[in-house]
Image (cartoon, rainbow, N blue to C red):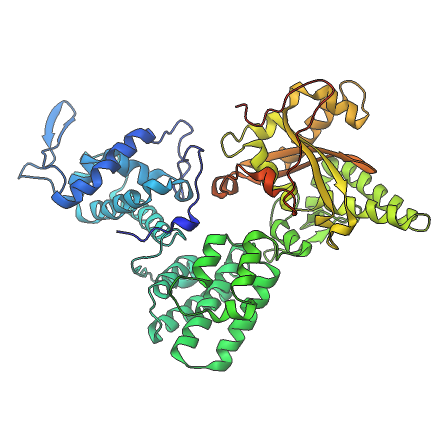
Length: 545
């Protein structure tokens, strides 16, 4: 039914989560067992050819037996829902990004059919099936269920993993629905463009949605920034294919190419490919302005990203997590590394940031002072400070692969990365590539506390205290819910031993394909680092789950 794009699929072994927009599900709410969902989905190909089994559904209510279909067989949508309860329940309740790739087509079918259940069934039938509860008003319940069903269906259809999508219908409302929900209509525009509807009607829809995204109440939200860029990318392509308004097309191309050069990782690789590089389609003018496929490959492999670009991908208020352009951020005047959106957020975070801020500021001052005596040593010290504070993959995604958080996110709290680096200034002019990973290993924190204290020259018990403070700093940032911490201890000849931390959102962990060959990729020259051998004799625990 769908054109599934295997080259940009993502997989995760984490359990799917339940989510409905506009309601907090009970803490004890459970999705159906995944094996039961797979069993329902396995029947789908056969039943779609021959139809679902005909049946009469009987319900017991208030001690009386009632028949849902007294006049004959069930209507088609209800028959599907009744025969595949686990699939339908899973499709409706599961968070969109958590649906496994192999279930995606079945989930889309179930959501489309459930939309028919809601719109074609009588109220008495929906109450008998338990879709409308006794205390609920039918009108309110139907609106809520229908909205969640259709939004999830649209999001699945516009998933970068799918290359063929159905046209979405616009909503009717007495208010301007475009300004109320420009993101939804941007999805509709995606559907039109991805269906190669390069015509005046699509242009009209793009113009109206772009105006709403810019001028509506959500126009200054950070997640609206890429919506605007994507709409302008679409307009650049539409105008090119229609051979009209070259000046406007040029304006859109310049705006989008400038934005994407500065913020290439603000969107997922799959979406970037979907917008700019669809197979067997006209060359996108924005991609041409960026430098073509070579630029795209550089972004995907990160080879084309400067240090400043990498910083923008993670630039957020350390306390509340808000991003630009929703709010202008400023650097901490002490360490000049982390960002805040307000003095209030900075004050709230100061207790946790005070010590690392002081350490970084002192290290920078010491390095600056060293310039007159030993310029090379000073440069090494400054490069080290910048490297350990950077968001380069060797400080992020590669460490996530090493920890195995894709399989067990709790390892971010129970395990630590130990690594030894070597400074190789001739290897690159970019400080991110001047540090070579010589040895690296994964260890259970409780097993190596004495080793940590020895490497950091701490007193007994101080290692555990350092780690406790680090986890507290992560947990007490108000935006760090559902974050997976990553802790590393790094040292090297002439390098200040550093206990570092970062955190990756669980959604990113789920979307990030695990790379079992991370050791072969962590160094730019492909040299594979050795394992860390500790004096205590504790063995590497990377593969011990």
